[in-house]
Image (cartoon, rainbow, N blue to C red; front, top):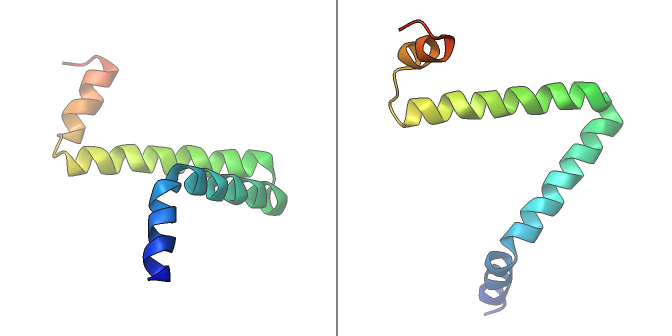
Length: 72
């Protein structure tokens, strides 16, 4: 029964929990690697996410790049 209450609490406060974990990861990254290396990692994780989303959505990446560059 206690597990059910704990899971319900996690689901209710999932945004706060994820935000706190993201802040913890960011602060630890800055401590261990420095601000600019951490920023570099975040940028490439975000770019990797965008490419992965394009693959999940079955978008032709070559066509997307050509449209971005204006060569169509």
